[in-house]
Image 1 (cartoon, one colour):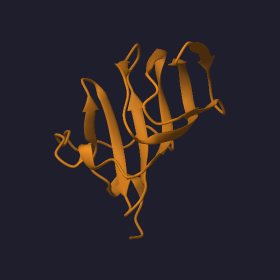
Image 2 (tube, one colour):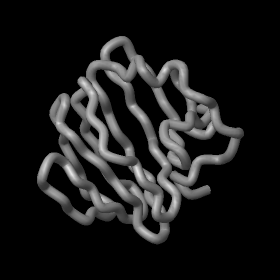
Image 3 (cartoon, rainbow, N blue to C red):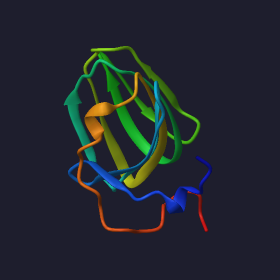
Length: 121
């Protein structure tokens, strides 16, 4: 599948958190948009998760470690480790990879069509 990010419909993965998701057989890649102050509450999953902040700021907690991150900040979350993230005052856009693929996202609600926040037009 070859496409542009703006052709991928956003999926609501948390209350106000949207993701443009590409599912592979063994991996899920997502560009995630967090609104200003947006919160992904503590949770854990069986997927390993790697991420990179593209835009904005966020405070990430993985296990007992907490850190403020901006563009270029990255994270690695092993399977079943509790974690949470809160976006800064301007929100954030991140890219994340999950292995195995996030099958639990298949039934999530699609959000209204909107242009992606990243990359800037």
